[in-house]
Image (cartoon, rainbow, N blue to C red):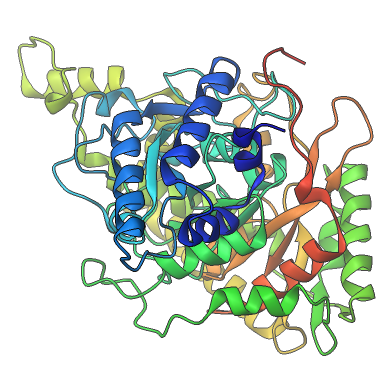
Length: 501
């Protein structure tokens, strides 16, 4: 194994430790990941832009600081990449849309700033579904992202570029966003850990809005400990975001280390069995879910049945609310600043033309739907009722947590599918969010962890989801770490990415 192969095999936590102790050079670590980007990008298209010069400058600064005896941050020298929804000063940010082509933000968002303050090295910005709207990272005017486990298959969405890059080892950890499952679903499809924190646990400042009451940023990693490390850096109140929570940030790594001992006695995990009978749940996904429950039970957890009475209404509720908020949030874009304005006889025609050229089909679909449900004559029948059902769904979870510490389910009802296979069937894609959107509607923390692979060819990853009460991230990380310690799924590496499968 070459030195670079050894670097790429290490977790973000191990890289940070090695750099801190002087066993690794931050520049070498960065160079290894830049070379991996060059090797994998022709097949994957995970990156929107690569900031090679900036990354090497930041890495050199970390090495100089270590040589001078300075105290290093928790992510010092760790190569990270950000979904292209995060605002980065001086680095182009497109949010996967033509309407933002050429926009270079004049300020730094909280996420990029906290990572930089922790010493992280920014490798670049990652591809995504336009404005976070999609389940496959193919709703974009740019190249669709490919899954490193099966090139030609989707990596999930909307944080598919992040998932593909982390799985392919072209960054040590990545940051994604989750409005209805967009961290957890691609994590499931790419054999990763994907953590959606409690709403408000991580700031939304500098995260381009899709649906403001649902959006949340979180880490995507190959190991549970890396997710805890990243969350410790990102979490905490932010004066720039009035919705951020002013609550103490616990020691997430301590929770992971405790869970790695594999002792879950006293932990109760709830399962909504009726959800497992829904049409569309893949048989191998169901089998891997049951196997994961057995792993947790062997570690001492107790599994009980619970009920979520309004579970089947979650998809409809989510798509009414998220499209309404998207319609409002995207009203600010007209393409004038981004080179799309044409010579038109009226401002209205200019506005219509730039939005026609600047937005893709899925974004237009959701703007139209959201505008419809917000009309005065539609408001009570659709938006008003959806808000009421959202409250009922949150109450269902609260009642369930009186009987259990967390709720387990599959993350995605199906493994990855071939690029283009579902792009013309938006309803089928919306229904794939069935297990993930409840956590967003209720503002709860949730995590997806590797749970195995399909037995058919190509061999595709499957994920296990855990949902907890508000601010229960330590408990979720502890149980996730116990599952990881008892399995080896997270240690597997995707096949060569140079040829389609």
